[in-house]
Length: 389
Ligand SMILES: *[C@@H]1O[C@H](CO)[C@@H](O)[C@H](O)[C@H]1NC(C)=O
Ligand SMILES: *[C@@H]1O[C@H](CO)[C@@H](O)[C@H](O)[C@H]1NC(C)=O
Image (tube, rainbow, N blue to C red):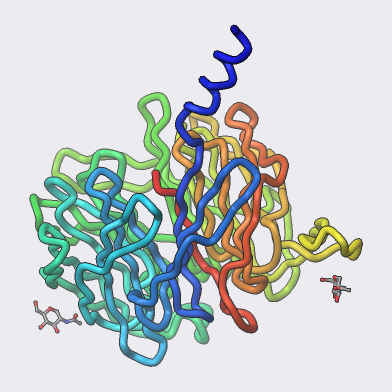
């Protein structure tokens, strides 16, 4: 009697399944995925994000998803989607925008605006998404350089690469890979205004960044694509609604004294949900070996790393805690679930999305949870993946 009761209780328990979405360049899709225990399955694919889907920004309370299309051929766009319970996506609007939007963040009252960093076109732009069926440009600023930076091939013009809302929701930080700056914007209602930028290390090429707020301190970290370093800053909020960034350190993204092989390009940076860890990915190293995802094949395969650092809450210093496999080659984007217990990684050169366990206390990635094939064709496959959380 009792055991029967337990069985029916288990059967009646709500499903633990979790939805994710991944963008992929080579099949031009946003792929909906279902994670159920150790299986990750493709539910559906949307072609409404144009030719080169990349960054995704979720507005979970409103069941809305924004997808940026880099538009390598020139036809860049933003697609707004309604997210459905079965994981599928219904396009609400597609707005043509300036070329190569690569990152976005929601901001302002009721998250009614989307700020976007454009790489090729050196532009920061904002859009109203108050009516997600009618996205409209509300402002923009385009930057120039007087002369190329220390890496003239990559720093010939400014290249805005990320847009990050600060923990107070009052500022947006935009790492500029071409100009070696963290461009800063103060939010004023639905609008924004430029405030003096923070200087990054010359020639470092800041790509992605994140704020960590710990014990009354605010720190900002960037991963730098050209120097393959990680930079730490202490952030001060000034009375005149500006920010000061004090440089704390800049060293190898494998930790102080570390090094990377030629051809390495640092990619993503995430702050753990508890703000205790900086986690970054590196591309083009293929320095780690992992089991083949084809269980019948005993040949190991190469993997790039995901690297974790513990943050010292008093001074913002980092301690290397782990260099773990990202699940294959070219982890351009990865994200954590809300609890910080899972890491989803998009492997651009392997047409694969992989999910690993993460121990919240130690910050270490652990066992493989699940994986799925995402993307179709050679290279340029999945480049970003997020949880529906
Ligand atoms: C900037 O915005 C104005 C309208 O506010 C628009 O006419 C112009 O095309 C935009 N420029 C860019 C570079 O997006
Ligand atoms: C086994 O995996 C290796 C590495 O991915 C691959 O080169 C090889 O073709 C695979 N062998 C078979 C029989 O699939």
